[in-house]
Image (tube, rainbow, N blue to C red; front, side, top):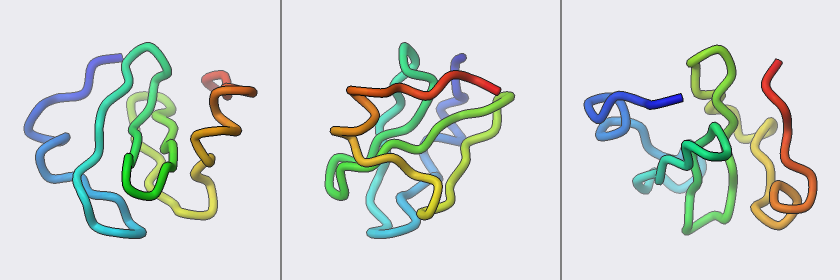
Length: 66
């Protein structure tokens, strides 16, 4: 899934408000500062802190698309 650059340019981490990095191979967005992974489901970034995965957990147990 490719996210449009215009969208990526305005999305920030809801926790720290820093820029996110797109990880197409994992279908999600990463906040390097918070070390959180925000999943993209059905082409929609899930930008909820309580649904974000810590990067360590995401590497061990990546979610599948719903």
